[in-house]
Image (cartoon, rainbow, N blue to C red; front, side):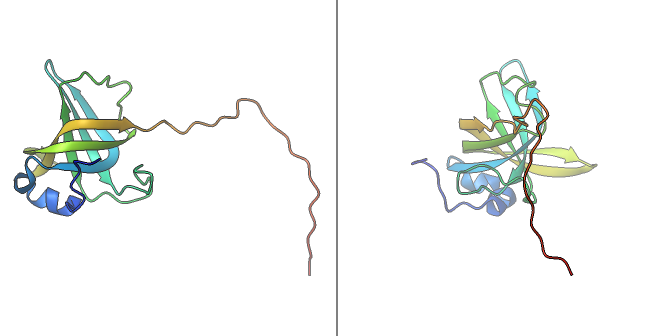
Length: 139
């Protein structure tokens, strides 16, 4: 966290990724795609604002997409579409790919640290019943 440049806004990074090359940023979002290649894994992430605990806000609207590259193998069955991640990465430029027939500029980060958030699961495995007394006033 000490290396993160907190003054870099995602909107600015998206407009001119090359202007921030070499800087470390803290971003979060939801995985759209995981690509495993022979020498690296690339995550395509839909950006979300981070909450106080650095977890991506589930109900926030994305301001765009970015990519994270790592030489580690990240299993696509685990790092799958819909999972939330928070990443600290060094800006490594940009990648332009077509999206819906038009070129789209993805800021590219080289992974320094990556946190995959646990999937919220219903902890209740058996049916439960509740009893109580309810008071009310009716008109």
